[in-house]
Picture 1 (tube, rainbow, N blue to C red):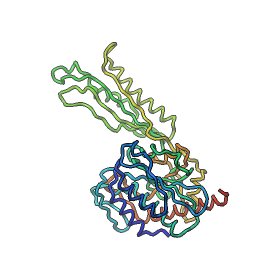
Picture 2: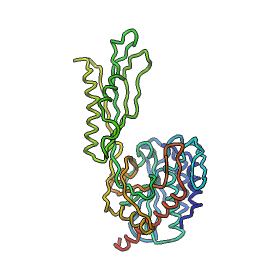
Picture 3: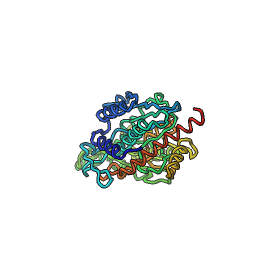
Picture 4: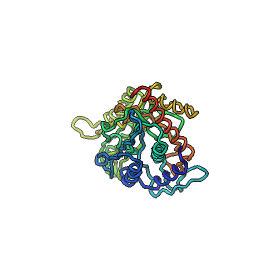
Length: 384
């Protein structure tokens, strides 16, 4: 049913198309043509305007031959840098880049698999319901495309995001995350002539960061200070510094507590260095933003049982797992769509060592063909 050579060919075509975040127009045009040739209705939303990109999310409706509820399949079109001019190669069943760029299997392996699944459904004419496809933009820079997607346009209430490595795992739990921007304002002065007149913003920030929790806090909570920018020259007492950080947790209460601790650490460090009444420096600016909400799908949810049964039908054991990263599934889940993540086999993503095996992609495509057929059988039995 699944044709390995055809799947290989389309994947190689996809990874050769440059599609860094906010520059997905070319691959979107390619996919529109492919989907329309398969008989799907294709539209784009206005997410491109919202995120400052060249194109919006692609939403396609692939009609079924059985009248049941639709199933959602999703992947993202954008890739990280260095992702321009990818020169892929297939050696002994493994796709790699030439070594100076990423491969782009994150998430073009997911896109290729979805296209192959639709082709199999069309050419075999097995009983299947409609499939709703979302290829999102700007996933790699904060799930921006999914966040901008008008969820009311979607008819599916459950589905799958193809965006992980393990083809035998169903991701049912993913954390929520907050992003932090701290700007510490000190006071500039000449570092050699009048250092006592300055207030070193970097030193204040360092004292604040020394109070912050860091790394793995517990089994479901993490924290990271990821970027520091400040100062002008070594002979100037730095007047300001900006710190970017994040916190994640599967438990919303723990995330709130950790977020409060980070903010308090900076507030206390700056307050303790205060210059007294009527003095403007030092001071602190704080911005806390939700990066993405959490996902927590029960073990007995239909979307989980469906994937497990499809795996069983194929003689495969599908297990559930929890992950520490976010995906478009977090956004879908927050809007009432039970969306699990299933892997495509991609490994060492976001590095020039990235690779994926064709056999994993073939197995993943076969699983999704069976998921769609099993879903159709269940819906028919229930009279939906």
